[in-house]
View 1 (cartoon, rainbow, N blue to C red):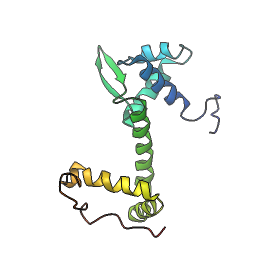
View 2: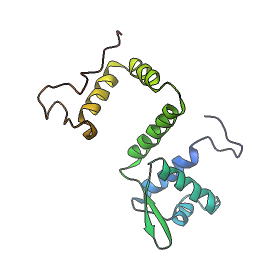
View 3: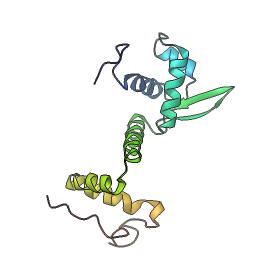
Length: 150
């Protein structure tokens, strides 16, 4: 990781905030997160970090008084998965050749990850299919993902 100008590696503060929320096991206000982190940061820094984590889908928030309280939607692993998926989506949306990028991504997957992706797509409620267990051994719409010749 590259050191930031203030000595903190990129993403470290987000990880610390997520850790604080995970340790608490309950929704926390920004002030409670600030106290949990030792109180050495500016309140606005903690607020900005929580807002960005919410925008990435890594934390949920609910009204608490005149502000918000933040919590992990399903634990630290889910928060990390949400942030990674958000970064992947940003990269995909920033390019011009979505089909080419997705095709290359699938081609570079390991056979195990390719099977997992196929199963996830088959179980996706947006496709109207319930996966192999719900519909016999039917492949997902358009058939299974093509093998990549590895």
